[in-house]
Length: 230
Image: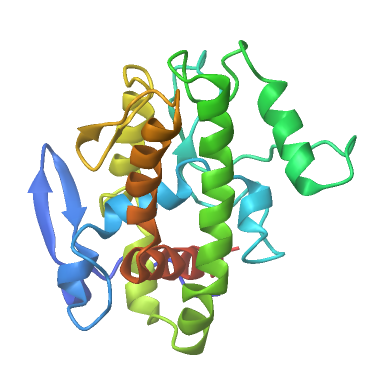
């Protein structure tokens, strides 16, 4: 486990913004493979993360994991949690797929899935399975590369400093947008209601933006780094 030490004067590029200190890990580590918008790609990968999702990457994951996520209980004032929550899937059905569907449909109408009133049942299903699919793609593609050539302790300190490096702010943007999106904006453009094949074509194109090798690498590096604190 690496020490949680902020090495600001040595290895981080910092600029004051609205009274807070912002760390730009991509500029601080120019030889890394982090993208310019690493905070957005990482936030997309983790905004609906759960302990079960984190265990795709490490069996050590617990409720004390330091991964910020959108609070799925929309009745709470705190819209972003400091740790991905434990949301146990049921075991009434035989497959993970069907138990996930059961979990989704069992929360319809009770504001406990974090998506807000604008999302239809089919949109909720598409969203949850997209997130699980993305986590498995990260694990299968970028994760082995990161494990073979892991980031330095200094870079991991930067990536884990979510209060300062833009990652938590990007998760907060998602949480705020869930209140007003219809259902959401992806890539700075509204996404249509999922009512037919044409609408799904738009959804699919936008979602696949987060499956590029670069975006997957961003997420894998972050997840590797934060897992060092478990």
